[in-house]
Length: 250
Ligand SMILES: Nc1ncnc2c1ncn2[C@@H]1O[C@H](COP(=O)(O)OP(=O)(O)O)[C@@H](O)[C@H]1O
Ligand SMILES: [Mg+2]
Image (cartoon, rainbow, N blue to C red; front, side, top):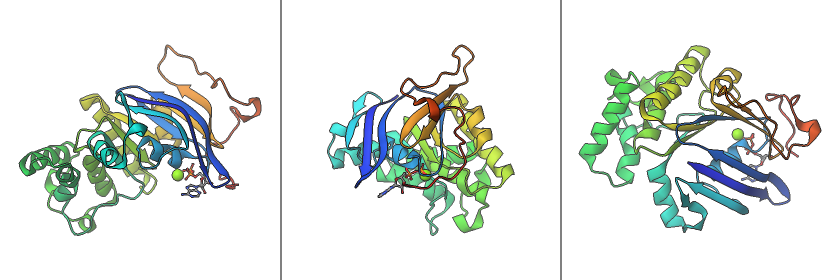
């Protein structure tokens, strides 16, 4: 579904990603963890085609996306990739239903179809009676579920989520995490989730541990494959690296 090879990214003299190789399969729920400043958001933005790497290749659903020009890429992004951010980023003047419909309308889908799909998704999220509410009239957990519905409205190949439960209390966190797995079960939806939440990371199929712009470890949870360190791991950068400890961004 997503194939990343030898991705490098620097901002000026600062190397943020130092050669990332990663393959994510259809229907997988993968978490990315690592200290603050490790490059998680940068990697997710590159996967989402919001940012271009300095070098490397990125294939999404078989398409070499980096070969596309900006206009085609924008179109591709809208059709194939859904985003969920830490803060819902819903438009305050629109209802829940309208917010969910918006990416479908931007992708020039017929309005009736957009409305039908958005309604179905909100129903699936248990928000049938919240369709006409504006974001200010929704709880934090509800807003985040609307944001997930919005990410799904164009039936994307993959949903990329950056700290999606980072602003939620523990009850809403658990519900949102459960929703990801419900969506995978129902629709075979693929998710890549950057998270500080150890409970969430522990329930995903695979956890990619990032530190200093490199994959230092990968934890697989399907029973057949044992946990293996990544091949290019420096020995001192392995299991002891704490995931939550803030580091300085040097
Ligand atoms: N647009 C940018 N310009 C300059 N530096 C950036 C930019 N985006 C991120 N960085 C730097 O890249 C490093 C990694 O950032 P980020 O990917 O946001 O890490 P994480 O999400 O793991 O906390 C940090 O040191 C950050 O300050
Ligand atoms: Mg980040």
